[in-house]
Image 1 (cartoon, rainbow, N blue to C red):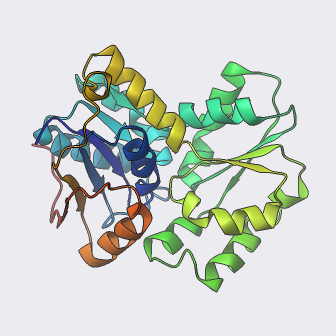
Image 2 (image 1 turned 90 degrees about the vertical axis):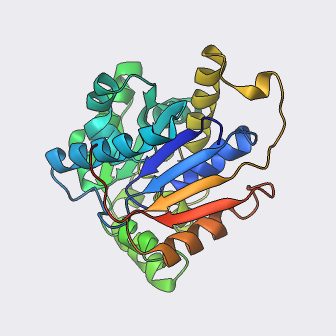
Image 3 (image 1 turned 45 degrees about the vertical axis):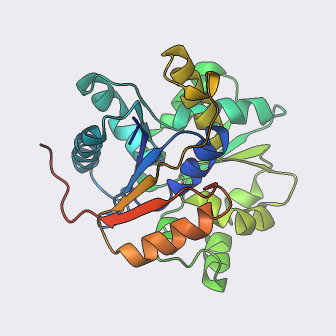
Length: 276
């Protein structure tokens, strides 16, 4: 396997970032880890989140990746700086990408942010937005029930619609310009979220902006084959979970169905993640 792009998340949410990376860089191989056995991260202590993220990065280093993408807002908010200091290869998160996209989309009104408890409590989005524009009003809400719905594969069920209505009731009272989906699981619920808030509110998912950042990094480091030979090879993508494989594979295949370009995929379970 050529040096892949490594991506990880607390569970299946990172498939939303994988999709955009594969679409923008279809010739690249991807290794993805979803820590489904320990999801959700949003209710965990910061020390646990850093430990989990460190263990996964150590595992991913066995694949000799070109870079690592933290496709998890909670891990980005809590562990990104620690991991960047520890590992020699580039490691990027998803928060900066989401903020850039939101500021481009905003028409001057308030920007909404929804995320896990840990992400919202960290104030990572507010800090990043105000660093770039101190005059923007930011309205943040934690939506702790969304991740379990997605992890259980219930994101299209009536139960999901009702949970979205309940969680976003207060936010819907504000006249926000756009809403940052501050958790990579939330695009699975995009239809329900849009219906609750109305189509005048633009939903921001950081996947595409993150994919563009990945491409720019590879070009900068002259490791992006797309510059020279944009050929899709027959090398496989690797998708690894720490919990039940069947549901992880089912959700991943359904979400990525149109974006694998005929390439084979290896789906496997990792029984235990430890730092080597």
